[in-house]
Image (cartoon, rainbow, N blue to C red; front, side, top):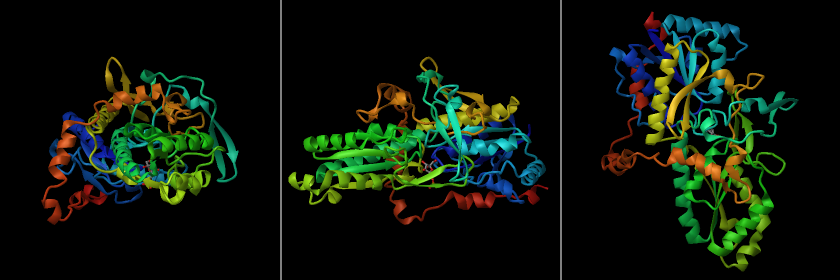
Length: 462
Ligand code: F6P
């Protein structure tokens, strides 16, 4: 293999550049050229195939900085339609003309679904990323527990999980954690800590909404910020228990902090946040408004009198507030944990192509003896019997719905990831760069400006 292509698809994470960097470093050692395809699969739809040569003379271009969040290649949620044979052939012809012999897709479940039709035509492997930590399996045959039924709105099928038969053995999880997750939790747990002192001072109840779609891993990890209550989408809301707990806490400490995953569901399983479908083939649901909906319910259930009696606020509406941490969880400098493992996974993907693997996924495994180490698994292991890849959900064993906190096993799961996640340089970097006086007068210089100058097109290569 002389030349490979790499692309970043789906939502960004702080560790994408680190994954690309890891791939380039390994490719340099193997004397393979790496072409970065711009804006994910979108580049392949463009007859000019915008791309950047990432390792001229087998050394990484300076813009490729593994400590920088986001992706210099840009990302999109555009995917190849597996039934569109004409477009697929056009894409293959473009890749052939570019001399690309293998493809590394850096992405999550949507990307793996999108990569599938290409695998029949060109070797392609996936390097996992997603802040949601939802790419992987809690145990090997978990995919067999998915059931599907025809649905009318939207037309197609709806998928449901049958009851879990297995307890999770941490050492047997497939892809223990995805790069990007640790940094997202760093932001969310820090956000919870910060909201706490203001809720404490003003005797308020804060609802902090975190990302993760239908998976509650980020909410679970936010427990590091010591919220009083953690609500994850995998467990339907128990309003009665929640109100009881909130009042009990408020009576004692005069403030409460609740973390809620954006995908939390009510007693009947309906998402509290408004849901709309995104364009990727994973059928991802975009959610908004869960914390606001929860706030409305709390205001109604607790009522103004409760706060007036306690003389702590005029109304429930004043006392209960929401904050969405939003895209701050996805942006910025990756923590050492994410950087290091993302780079390892990028390197592993290059090796996988060299070993002749196709339609396979690089994974980050953990066990007590070896700690974290990279491995790989066939893409089909992540697909259900109809070929569909589902987001990994927080296993029931990781959460205690009575205390509304991570369970003992949930805590055991988090420990290996976070006990050493922050590198000394992460803090030093903040100390040195955030209040650099130059920031006040130097305009921001976007890396996109430099990358634009490096973009080449198919016709340049011919
Ligand atoms: O999948 C990553 C993620 O950040 C989710 O946690 C979130 O729901 C979604 O992407 C947001 O997507 P967008 O940036 O397109 O609004």
